[in-house]
Image (cartoon, rainbow, N blue to C red):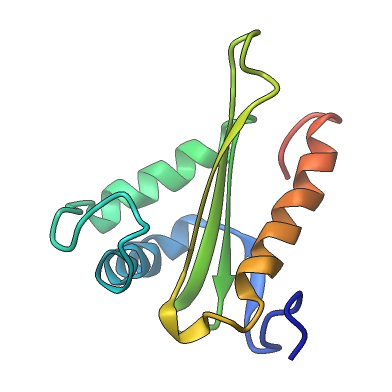
Length: 129
């Protein structure tokens, strides 16, 4: 499979509040699978309700975007971008990406970044989406 394409069974899309439980599970799995995430295994205490509220907050923010790689029963990965909101930092952004180990080397991370990059080009016209 080309490195720039994810599996046909995975769809990259904007996160929805209904994804809260799946996103909590994904993040806890990523904490176990890799040392590249910020939290160590067991350190994440986010509840489904807290995650749903964070997703709702993101939906209302022009400076934050979160996209997920949805494979139906679970999420395979995500990409989150937070833009600088101060005049001196408007040209900057923080990017976080996480992909399940089972999807490493299949182009899913590249697909998430491409989706995010296409959203970045649209940001100048009024938002991330």
